[in-house]
Length: 492
Image (tube, rainbow, N blue to C red):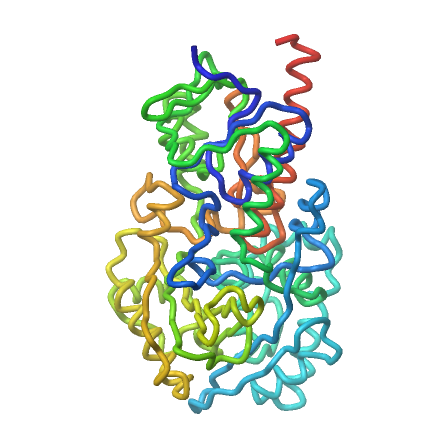
């Protein structure tokens, strides 16, 4: 006889484990299955030669509010959310080639950060006035105004303003890449504005023990409440009978449940795990048309001694953003003169993340989500060259460059490719006009008992990992309601 559960969660990324833990805590019999040998999805932890961290640079949990705080509180493990603070280096390359650095102190910012930012940009008095006005307008948007901006791209919103300095335009375009993992012609202004306001008004840090520790803490709640988590258990098929889910099948076993929550991505779920034949043609076409996020290519730098002072390094210029035209040129091996980059030094937050006397930097940049993209190796070489230009004092202490990760690795670890050019998305669905806010794909699928969780459905207004946790919180409530309806109303 197949094993029977109330709910099966497919995929143990943050969205999946948060949803599973909340459902287990509510009394449901939960099974979480993941194809990898470790939980965590894209935030799976690494441990190499005494160094610990993530495969991609990951940072930015607000300590005052947000999905992580809400999730750990609801799960009864709030005391385990130990967020460490450290300085952040915001590096900007001026048009003349000079790199200037603005350092954000650890903790709450006491000074207005725009002053240093405008100095880095070399704005005159009029440009400062215009820029401050635009930023203030964004910060003061009402919830109703933000909802209207679900249908307005960052590019369109900027076009509504006159005399915007090119540095400010570049700032918004870069942050569409950095914070929304999309291109500014498509990213919805509502999403970028919400993210920028949240992170501009909160204190952010890195979790002690890394993000893998957080996943382990959440998985601990699943198990403590009678749930099961099984790794090396790739789901080959989500089983459907007469329009309702009945369970899942792995290579060698069938698990039965009236509810399945997929953390595998909406496109892989519909097009592969369930199959197009179980959905209306219009819905299948809608799913196929969903816009993916950008990809991300990263690598690890191992240093023979601590050479980097700050916890986070972000490097940009007014012209380092990616748009659709530049993505096309990158596919031909033609890269921007300056790449936007993002790096995290885990041991500068938590010394236990590296062997004594050594240091690791996880550094990368944005790229195509295509797992077969041929330009990724050349792009990572460009990152190396830019690092050497920016940090010449650190170069002599590089012991190794390793851990090269990109869209191909994402497709292997997390998101099965089901459409040409897709599968290596850094977060999943892009928060673009038509697919975010009020237009976000429903977490409840047309098939009875099938739900989606993760960045693709159920969350909003946060960075990728945060949006996945937000989705886990929201989808757990939907599933609980569905379970109660099914038991109390339909007596099934």
